[in-house]
Amino acid sequence: MTAVDTPTEVLARAREQVLDNGVGLSQTDILTVLQLPDEHLEELLALAHEVRLRWCGPEVEVEGIISLKTGGCPEDCHFCSQSGQFTSPVRTAWLDVPSLVEAAKQTAKTGATEFCIVAAVRGPDKRLMAQVAEGVKAIKDAVDINVACSLGMLTQAQVDELVAIGVHRYNHNLETARSHFDQVVTTHSWEERWETLRMVAAAGMEVCCGGIIGMGETVEQRAEFAAQLAELAPDEVPMNFLNPRPGTPFGDLPVLEGSEALKTIAAFRLAMPHTILRFAGGRELTLGDLGARQGMLGGINAVIVGNYLTTLGRPAESDIDLLTELRMPIKALSATL
Amino acid sequence: MQDGEAAATGFDPMAVVFCGQCGELLAAGDHLACQQRAELEPPRYCPQCARRMVVQVDPVGWHARCSRHGQYASD
Image (cartoon, rainbow over all chains, first blue to last red; front, side, top):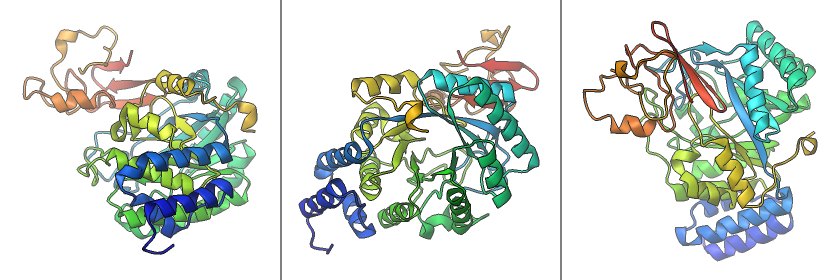
């Protein structure tokens, strides 16, 4: 790749390298893709969609998420309304196990195969681990669904415990490029997050790791982030777009332009042709209904349906109807095991 | 309360005084931005007293509890 590559040349190379051979683009080429003029957006999305169909198939993995412990987090992630360090209106709440099971049942009714239990903590303590263990068992006894967790940074013993209780996937987002991380979080490091991800992968749990686009990073840092995720090779990459939360340091950042978000989706698909690339938070604000459709036809092959942790999403039926219209079957539970 | 929010059991809609999104008096300002935000946000403030509520979002709805006025929930 040189500076003289035209958009046509870089897309042609992506077609051969990623579509034909299944090899993700380099950081340099990802940057070129992110910088493509808007008149190439349609062509870029079409290629990313082809790559997704070629290497992942037409199925879409559907997931629901729930906050087990909301608010009061000691960390200072500048995008997060659940940090106890900011003047956010979000108050601390704990969900009981029966409510957790009910949420899993609601999620399964949509056809989802994944249910992720999330806690706003630096890392789990004994009380939280005990509640997660009780909750996972209760869900497995009542609902046919895969259970994932997102509980912050883990010790090796906690990783082993989650494996033992049957958690099949662990979410821990790197959030942004390594070079931008200290502008987003100061209470822990990118490397500490990486270490948890390394332990999770080594223990045999599936790794879910993505981040949030639109937190003041440069386009170069967006390309860097995609390359760093590709190096990690997670099973799933959730793509969030910043929804500026009142009271947080990022509360006044502008919402990402829809075309930028779509280019990022396509670029991440071309960087990671085999991964599960999931639409997550902020898409309603950044992309709206039309953008959601374009994203599904531009490299995305998984969605979080219904509400998020502290904010509301599109009704699950809207996303399911869209998948039906696009003739994208929901991945069956048997296909995920 | 904003559109899309449901009342607590026994809740008198006439008792709505405060904006569930910003906690300010509904009579003060137009709260248009709050109404737009309510499409993707549960209420955070009790519509009767503006206390911050404990809110739990689940995949299909939300529940909110005011320490003085009790529970609210989505439809």
